[in-house]
Length: 102
Image (cartoon, rainbow, N blue to C red):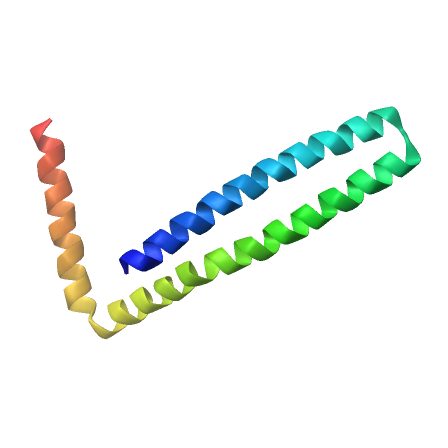
């Protein structure tokens, strides 16, 4: 479980870097469009499009473990509804107790 969290955090950091790169490439595309140079605009657009495609693929890869985990949680709740209700009630009471202390 901990290894999955570390992997998810690593993927999240990598995705944040990729999103920053997309923003940078978008700014380059805007600058190229402002200069209206045909070759520069085509190259910037191609680079930006490639980055968007890469980030979409990485987002799909990163979200897959989360979707699988949600499916396992859903299965657990369906198989053990009273346990899930009990845990939710205890967590709710604990939150209420802590909120009342303030």
